Length: 341
Length: 270
Image (cartoon, rainbow over all chains, first blue to last red):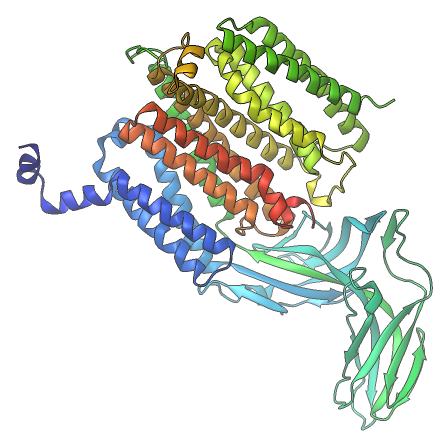
């Protein structure tokens, strides 16, 4: 009888919305979301869809529940908690559409002008990063005994919106923040010999750096193969440190300059160069300016971060307020008939 | 001489004495509540000396190595339980359920290497202390719910029914456990938020589904399921108790199991 009355009094769409907002469906979708989370952690297949689908369905389920369950209207804090959860899901989705993650490497004195080595972004991310510019002035990395990395201090310079030159120190969990982008130093860094290459056929000399493998992670293989601009033959450049830089027993600091020489293999011959020295190869003359450092940065952009934080904190506080009010109204030992154990 | 290890061993011995007294008291029907509580407080004080001495020596909180994680969690779980049992005496007999879980952790702790770990530079932030502190309250609240649920399940047996006969009815214990699970959800939510804020600048992303993040999220979902089932379907108390235990198992695996199966950033190896 009760079911028949519901059919008579409730429009069909209203019943459908109520079913979509049911707790049973919510529990089933939470199970699906758990599977999606496991898939995402294993980077399995279409993990994005496996997460997005149950989240979208849960958002629909929650919206329907809010529209049809009287308990939400009677309990504003509970309603605020669930609406804040909806906001978190919506903001996370907006963030995925507009985010950017990437990496870049900069030598000391080199300016970043928007070019990234690796880039991953949402379909709606624009090209604003191409307007971001800063220069790495230099950095130091402190190590504890046993090759344990401690603090990184990188000095950065940039021009603000008024054209004023600004400087700051960044490193580890202190990023450089420009135009909504966060640039973080990474453990990936090393030495960068600076050269000037003058091609044998003439033309303007080209100045640049070669990034040696990450240091000290690849301490034993400080060698890089590279081809000078306009040349056809690669030069194999090996960095030979002349002093013990890494100390496994005491704290030490990674910084330039260090005593060293470069061994360059080309044309079946080996040449050793020190800062300021040059050598004429078959395709041009290589002048070794000196040893600098390079730092790998990661870049992250997500405009939703402060809003996500606000929504998540609001959710937690609303939940706390809901339970506090509810439990204050109903003592745990009252309202329930005592029963024999 | 550093007081760290002697204080820890003294604390473990005191906990063991308190636990033995609690078991014997529950089994005999005459639980010497005051003595058990006093011994636990004494054990907590000795344990606090051990943790404080190590903190002073190393210059950072106890959250890097498995030794530190186990030690600080044994302390915080017991401290939260004792605090709750001081305010709610009905919880005291549940020590007979909870202490065996903690004894397993204590045994595990005794087998750990107490040498210092390396503090990564991104761990030197107050956010980490907030994140860890919220997590400890969360786990403590779940442990209390498990203690109450354990009493409900134990009462399904004749011996358990006799041991815990003096406690209120199952429905009331279930209601109390539900409240601690609700508290746990609030604190786990805040723990995840604080962790995400920290991770953003520590690792350049706020969430990346690393194993610990995934397991913490699964625990959050399980907690949400347990609370929805409890409030919507009003299952029998043993079912609610089983759900609370499922939450605790997931949380335990998250806190203490994941570091064994991954070298992800959360382990500190960055």
